[in-house]
Image (cartoon, rainbow, N blue to C red; front, side, top):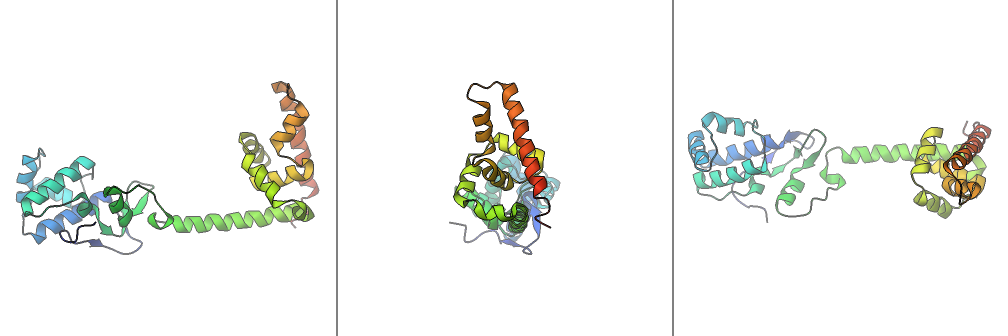
Length: 243
């Protein structure tokens, strides 16, 4: 359970975020002030725990200028507990109603951070990562637009392909399909649809069928170029379908 007393929960706007070191510093300062403890009280107790802190160093911590490493958090909790006579947990030091910057890329909710420090598995959902929902919405919008454009490019052929076959081909596609799609500047979905339309199989399967079981690298390379030429011709024939 989260502590029901102790440090007043830091609160800021829904979209504002702060580095973890600032969250810890603000919580530590709030706890110290609430118990009428001084910077010197904290500094002296910190030295008893092996931290070579003076009042300036405590001020740096409360201002968020000291990295919130695990050793620092662990020792700080013990120090504040001794100084105030009220036990402090790691969750007390990091808990916040807002977003916490873990690094330059990842910003998470204070709730998820507190859960992790209570021993819960670190499983981040969309709601737990700042900007994730917007990125997901953008990705879905791009995917929908790409899907519509691909089907327009396929024209009538898109109506004759079984969705289950498309799923099978895409599920079994690998490095070869990824490379060919990039070379031809098409989506994985469009490559799968064209492959099914032309050969009724994936690119890799058709290549292996034509090259034969005992084909060497040279033979497989020649067949790969042939298949790419067939796809290119298909794309050229359907270049006006999406207009």
